[in-house]
Length: 306
Image (tube, rainbow, N blue to C red; front, side, top):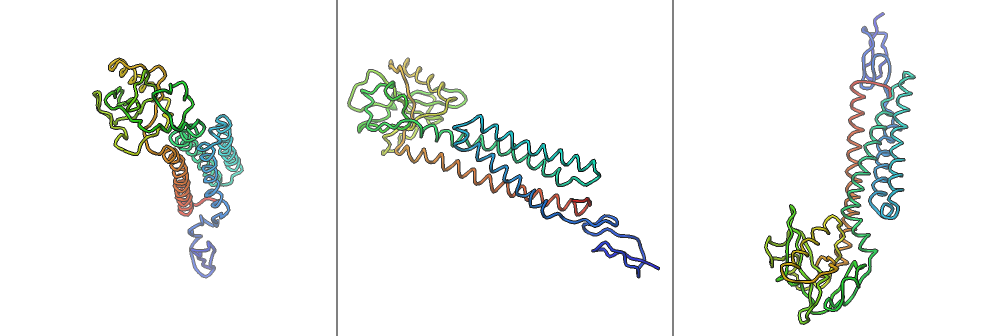
């Protein structure tokens, strides 16, 4: 009697001839089934790990407990190692470990990406916000009679009426970028020391008296503290050049970004941090779904229990 295999079900029809044929999820006489639970776990588990690690590395926990933040990240990374061990055991039992192996790689990538992008988000956005927020706020500061030592813990400073940036005494120090400084002064008062300086990067010319760092804003009369440790030495060198060039005395220079509303600028750091965190969440979810769909297509074409 002739037989024929049903191409969709992988079953043999006794009325038609031919041997067993492969269906979409079938190899030889074995039926291949898509494991919906494995698919859901491989979509959501790496994404959950990515979101958790990036949240821990981006926000206040990293600021308050940096060591524990990295310990948490390393612990999440162990999940990929456990899944790799399970995949190896499944292979030794002559079972297809495809979804375990996929989950191991996906979780490893998720933890690494969450740690890298979370740390970058913390460094560029959230850390400056937390640093400034933890410092003091000084209202109505008269720079003519307030030495730098009196406001060393300043994060936001609101200057007295008549305060301006003296662009005639500006200076720039070049180290790839131009690090620009200009003293903050009172228009009608003489100063023996110049401890408060407006700063900016690449907003002045290479020569003296070419400072353009937000000085065009007529409402600006406040300062937001410079928090980038890697930039501070170059601004100090620019101040030393200004001291020598203009015969000034700046024993305790403090650097500020000259602006009208330091609170809005500070909150912009936090807004950017949350924005990039949400963007990274959606991008990683789309990437992970794309990888899972690719794995399903690979199973459908090449077979394998899953």
